[in-house]
Length: 512
Image (cartoon, rainbow, N blue to C red; front, top):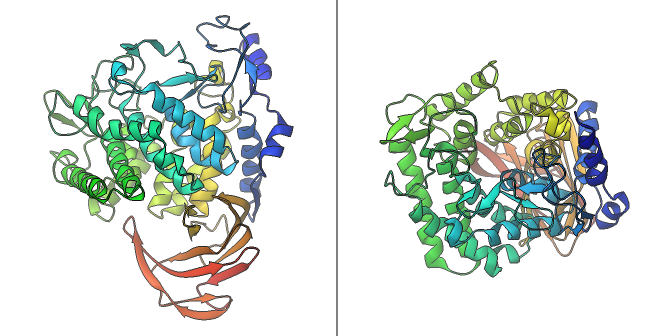
């Protein structure tokens, strides 16, 4: 590892701890699993070390041009590292995967400015693609951008930025994510013009790549040697989620006609996937197409697991359940497991979605046990734990994953569903931000859930959910009939509880 790596690490990675503490209060964890507690605390500190807001530093630093602009000092916009630590930039794919963890650290300004920077960069000259990487001062990162016809671009990122805009709205209640003109124009362009302009080789309404490499536009996040995919599983799945997110944001904007149009587009795309695109000539799922309209199945890493993770597969179908087994089998194989740990950071999210909690926890443990191992690209990153995505996503894996927290900030609502396992019998996290509210969520396995509404304005509505079909739940020891729901093919039972600021309520599946 070069001396320069350590110099830039010291110069650019070190956090201004005082600034961070003034800005927000860290989430605080208590758990029966000491390994989980230790790693979560590490992740909080590590993720904060990547915040670049207001710093003075160089741009366009990379392993290819170590001295390019080293002596140039410019002011960084609100931002954090999302990509290799040797590169002075944040990347769209990494950013999309880090936003929840960043929000939970109080990095609201950073999320908004970074999303806006990507949205502004997408224009007709780039055929609707946003920049792949942006310097900390908001300028194009030249390692990945030569000109408007020669820059790195991957189809799923276009759509994930739409999906993540809506997710940030749910976490923050910040109406700019829905009403800001720059963002709304980007979302609209992504689900209309971009799809139309990139649907020329296989005319089916699915946005395409070129099959010719990342600087000419690829259909998938999987950059490893593979088939020259024109359409890919992670691309179509991310497009589906973008359609859904756009429909929901149109609803919030009061445009019922547009919302209905995109709910229908999402439903039609999912139907097309499950009746044709995804199942043609295979007993599993196709993960892409090459020319001329030739399906490709088998194992494609991101273009495989994104399909069930984004929910474009039929959740309760035998095919989907077998595919989850197939994914687990591939991940357990020497040839199938990704060499880069940031790819593995998606896997807990996938399995938590289907309440396959022990599998999800297994892959969280894998990440924990490999944090101090050398990264596949160690010259750029050093140890695995130095890759920013690892710490940010671990925070969200704990709160969104193990605790099953689902926010709706504008309505001051939260839903929870425990995903704890016998190895994590109890878990509590304080200082979880949902809009202007702060709360503590605690589970004891899937038998008991508690919320402490630490502070906020007005009543907090809590949907306290438990797995399975139950007839009653107990609210602070009082028996109450419960309602039923279904998420990703799995039934759950729930009660609605209203809390006032500083109030604590415990819901249990029985009298304990």
